[in-house]
Image 1 (cartoon, protein in one colour):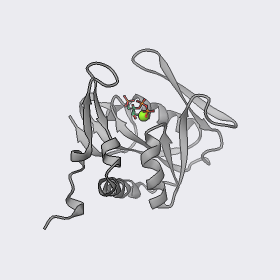
Image 2 (spheres, rainbow, N blue to C red):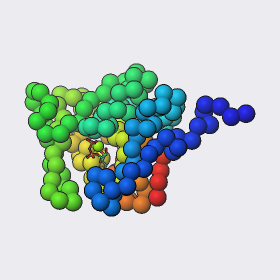
Image 3 (cartoon, helix red, strand yellow):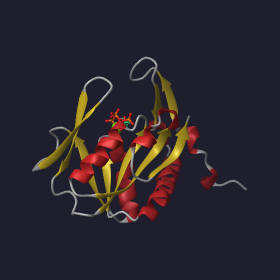
Image 4 (cartoon, rainbow, N blue to C red):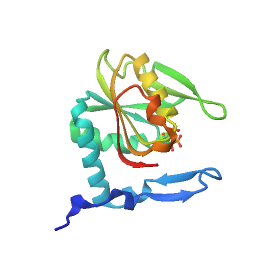
Length: 176
Ligand code: PRP
Ligand code: MG
């Protein structure tokens, strides 16, 4: 007998070639989110991966990390915080600038977002080169967090991003 739990979630991820630039294959989670059963199952499976890390807080990376962190924080009964692009967060902030292929980018956190030593799992939709999550982990540590894991829905293993992250990394769907 096959049931809802046997759903292959990869069938709901759409691949769009040449977006946002020629030569880049975009893994689109919009088609997963559109299907209520598939999305609910994905959030349930992600929650079960993260639960053993026993986080006090989930840190959501702007912008697509917000989509996965919010429902999972709700299911786990833990808090969440936002890591945002520059200039979006009110009050005192701590920032971290990191290099991109061309140029650089800055992420920010509210200075009082975590209490010293709080266990934090950082969440994003996708792990590619690992630059975004590596910067997020550095920023969380600057703010006093104990980073106990990084969690993504989709991992592109061929880009080796995981090796840049010195924490436990979990992913739900991986692609070469
Ligand atoms: C995408 C994706 C991850 C990041 C992964 O975000 O949502 O955050 O890139 O790439 P990396 O592992 O090579 O750093 P993007 O910067 O496109 O912004 P968005 O989430 O705001 O759409
Ligand atoms: Mg992103």
